[in-house]
Image 1 (cartoon, rainbow, N blue to C red):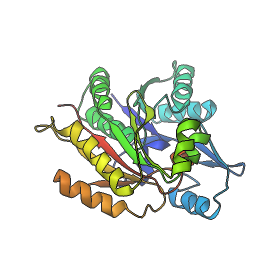
Image 2: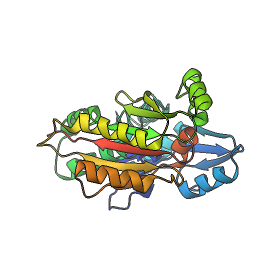
Image 3: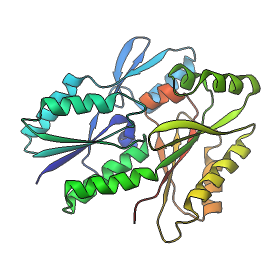
Length: 287
């Protein structure tokens, strides 16, 4: 059976250069009321350069229009695919999941569309799509892929440090009270995204060194019982965070790992977290 795997543009797959055949449903971003399609006519580098030069710029985002999604699904059906499997960013962070689900019902008589909520974003979302594509190519059934991804998303976590809380407050991803404290006392909040796809603040520190130490301890706590199980780390950045290389060096040394994937955060995510974000994604695949 010919199955097409699709993800949303917030998976950062535009900036992942290993070979794959995953399609992308692109979210929208608006800069000064000008509409762009995430990763298509506005790249991450262009976006972060733009907001660096225009710090007062108002940026908003939007889920993809249902009509565009329907047209995309029909285009895939015309290519001879029997089914479409879509992995989406967390439904707790965006209405994209519901839009894609609505579009799937419109084309139900033309092609079957299975929509899976990764309950994450960024490369954790991408990894679900990549694993789905791998499993389908190896002959796994859809039910087996879904069962695997449900276990996978339980252990996907992202820890990140933002340069400014303003973007998260404006977008409603962080409470005004917590944001107020951060601005007044110059606190560096350490945030965590995990299933079911919500952002929480896990600690407030005053230096990047202490932030790195906190993230390292969090990762060690999650991986200490995984001695016979692989785990993968990736670095997430927006703009040019000055201490990125230092964080990579610490993680490699303390966790005894050689390779850490670096992933650029897409403009749509960047509109909500701002410039110079530094994060670490943890993926623990099921055995």
